[in-house]
Image 1 (cartoon, rainbow, N blue to C red):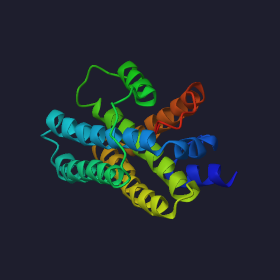
Image 2 (image 1 turned 90 degrees about the horizontal axis):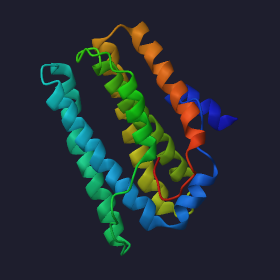
Image 3 (image 1 turned 180 degrees about the horizontal axis):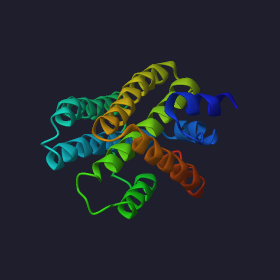
Image 4 (image 1 turned 180 degrees about the vertical axis):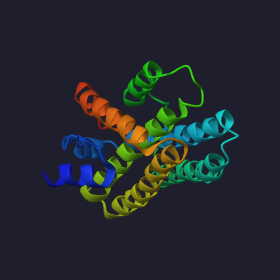
Length: 204
């Protein structure tokens, strides 16, 4: 119950991660670190895409540009952690969680490029919020102290990104509209999560 309350208060998430996930993730660090590395790479790529799509949004460019550098830095940090442990970066794997979100946003397209920015920002916010929650679980539940500290830093960073994307959405759109759409994203994710297999080799 405490975890559900924390998720709703801090991140707005309606459904907590299955508690089995942390134990499964810890069983094969090479797999979870590989997936984590690619998640950071994709986050950097997503931020670059936002800038390419909306270069006329001055505030968006100013806020998102530093995140590109930060996310790529995270990718390198994960690689360094793997190298330190003698682990190999594996192949990029399918991210069913993000793919389902992409299918959802495709259904929500209005045909108006500018209006569709709201959902783009909210999808980014949701991914960052869920990543933050997963990093928090690792920082609290994994047995190795060094890895707990490693993931605590990522948790703090993702929380900042989550807030940034929500703030950008409220900058460009009416707050009532953003709140309505955000609730729809949260509801969709809460319905979608139970359909996914709990896997320790996936960050999402």
